[in-house]
Structure formats: structure tokens, C-alpha cells
Amino acid sequence: MKKILFVATFTLSNFLSSAQATGTASVFQLASIGHDTYLIDTLGNTYNIWQCSANAASTAYLLKDGSILRPYKVSNPSMNGGAVGGGIQIIDWNNNVTWEYLWSNTNHQQHHECIPIEQWDGTYHTLLIAWERKDAASVQQAGGVNAEMWPTEIVEIEPIGTSGGNVVWEWHAFDHLCQDDDSTLNNYYSSCSQHPELFDIGLFTGGGGGPQGGGDWIHANGMDYSPQLDQIIFSSHFLHEIYIIDRSTTIAEAATHAGGNAGMGGDLLYRWGNPNNYGANGVRELYTVHGANFIDEGLPGQGNLMCFDNEATSNGGSGNSRVVELQSPLSGYNYSSPWNQTPYWTYSDPGNFYANHLSGSFRTKKGTTVATLGTSTYWREVDMQGNILYEYNHQGGGGPGGGGNMAKASIYELDYPGLIGVVSAVKSQNIQYELDIYPNPAKDKINVLLPSSTALPVEVEIYDIMGKKVNSHLATKKAFTLEIDQLEKGIYFVKANTADYNICKKLIVK
Image (cartoon, rainbow, N blue to C red):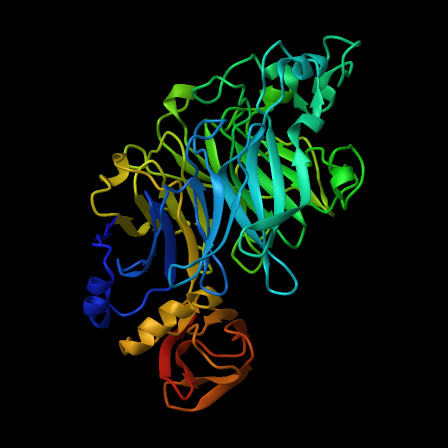
């Protein structure tokens, strides 16, 4: 397979000098490397650099107004471990910090991801992963060993002003434990294997997390949110599983086993990857998993689940990382069991694609997948057949084998509103606008993606090779579907005309 490597120098001046020659790309990556966060396209152009005062804890996300949401590492955290953060910032396109918030104190410490949840009024809440400290006495009463524990909590913050915040929802793994050893202690069930919706506290042995050995036995590391389901998916480094929980609960319900859309309170709605954790039959699939996410509505594979299986050799893995896609066994708001289905699709490239931790993957509108080797500064886009469409390495990143890290890159396509800064730069450079059509060749229907700057509505027309108009559609969205089953086999042209551009793309109907 042909591999094309694009290496950027990560300066805005270089982007501006080369942009006319390269045109625009359909996918953009947001990558946090060291102190800075970069917006980069698939052609190696850098569109913006957010220069920050502290190292990123994990992935940054681009908001619809062109700002980024970014977790960062605070100085001297009281709970210190892998991907420790504690600080959260919103930084606008022009590098101004508009909101900054700390979730870092003696008993609570943000780490790894924080993700934006858009509200009805266009504002955002922040959903964060954190440790919470539980002393040895509390752990013993819960049915565990005599040791301090740092179980996972997930907390939703409503920003207030420039530095304040309200906790509007929270979930705690410590509320959802089981043990089958001592009926005089909390969380006793006759058999934990009969309760896969709970974490078996017997898996906690007293160590396993951070330089301080503070009992980070779950080590959640990646997270995503489905607004359609009002559910959260997250991954566990040390338990080698992915989980889904219900955000539709109240705070009180999230601490119990009832309530919410699924009727299960804060219990696990779904888990996959390591059935040994709950005494089930099945093959262990995950070895140091990261980057769990839902495939968004409107994308190929919508509703499916995706994660990055590091296959870390330190945990018994093969040393060849892979992207895993699962068909979600969803029924209403619940998930049918047993939860040991085989993957729907996987991608690997033995010997050439490996990161022992970090990393992630995302699906695009074209049905391709962008995967990041987070322990380096390298990512690639692949199709469903495993062909590499492009690969990219940050200058000095050291390639797929390592050299710096960026956790994972979040991706955005041309119709995403937050790329307004990109659109302005593109227009100022007279870069060719693109009309995106897929699949092409096509038979029954095509997906059309207009440039993000398109003023709606706009007439989109299809002409045959003789110049006769055979179809017309008034587009009120920048991404839409056209039925073409009435067209004969042959070559056609799809045209869109606005005050800013006149673009045309060849279409093959098979």
C-alpha cells in the first residue's frame, strides 16, 4: 500500500506561504503536544497554535465558537499519577483564556480527559474524569483490603464567570461495588459473577496507580458522551475494559441502582473487553485500552462503539495495537447480555502501529478512521480495508515508535462551526473550495458536504455529460444526502453556486 507522509514545521507563517499550493483538506486534527495545542489538516498545514502555560493532561476539544477546552497539569498535585491534570481551561481562537477551573485538592484530582457537553443555549458544560481519595477504613468497610483507594469519579461542571463552576451531575465508582467474601460488610452479594453491573472490589489488591501507590485500580483514561442516549462511555487502563453509564439520572439516582432512562441508576449498563473481571465466559479482548467513544449519529457505523486496544506487552498483549469497532447490543436504553460479542471491525498494522498506552481513534463522514499513537506524535487515516490514506508525524516526534506524546488527536470536518478561524484563513488565501461527495462511484444515493463557509440555503444541481440538468436540491444544511437511484449509469457533475464560489465535482453513477 502507498504511504504518504506529511511533515509540518508548525508555524503559521509556513502555512500561509504554502496554503495556495496545497488547497484545503476535509479533516482537521486538534493535538496537544507539551504546552501547546495545534490545529492541523491532513495536508500538513497548521491553522492555529494555542500557546499555553502548562503541559496538557490529555486531549483538547474544539468548541463551536473556535475556542478549545483543554485539561492541564497543575503544580504539585496532592494525588499524582499517570496523565494527572487538575486544571481546565477554555481558550479562544486568539489565545485568550476565557475560563479556568481547578478540580484538584486533597481528596479529588482531575486526570486524563475532560470533554465538552453542549447545552440547549449553545453554552458548554465540562465532563471530567477524576480520582477521589478513600481512606483504608472506608475501603475495608466496603469489602476491600486495608489500603487507601483512588476510585474513579466523573463530574459535570457548569462554568460560572471566568473561574467559577457548579457541579450539576456526578458519578462515583465507589457507589457501585460488590463483594462476596464477608456478609457483615458493605456491598455483599452471594456471588459477584451474578452482578456484572458492579465493580468487584476483590480486584483491588492495594496498589496499582501513581508513584504514590494510591490504589488507582480502575485508571479511567478516555471518555465520550452520546447526547442521543444521554450516556457516557469510558475506558479503564488497569481493568482492560470499556464501560457505559447513564447520565440521565439525578445525582441522587447516580449513587443507587435504580432511576434514569435505563432504570439502573449509576450501575454499569454495559462493559466489554475482559469478562474475567466479572466471572463470565468469553475471550479477553483488551490489553490496556484507551480512547473509548460512541460513533456519532450521521457517521458510517453510527451507534457503534470504538476503542483503541493498545495490546501492551506489559499486560500480556501482542505488541501490535489495534482499533476496535463494536456493534452496540442496544435495546432501548439498555444493552443485551452476555457482553462478550466479537468485534465488528478491527484495524492493525503489525510491526508498524503500536503504542503501549494513551492513543485513540475517531470515525469520519467518509467512513474512514483516524487513529493516533498517543505515545508519539503520529497519526494516520485508514479506510475499512486497512489502506493508509495519509499519515502524519509532528516534527521531531520520532514517528510511530515514540518521541513525545499527545494522548490522542480529536478530529473535525469542514462543516464544523468551530473552524471559522480556518475558513477566514482559507478565504484570505484564495484557496480552492471543495465540494465533497461520497461514496463516488455511487448507485442509490450520495452524501454531499458543502464548504463550511457556505451561506444557506444554496441550490445544488446535478448535470449529465451533455449539460442537461437532471436533479436539483435546495440545501438547507451543509451536510445532506441526495437520492440518485433515478439516474442512469454514467458520468454526471454536481454543482453548487454561491456568491463566494462556483464549484463542481464529477460523479460516477454505477
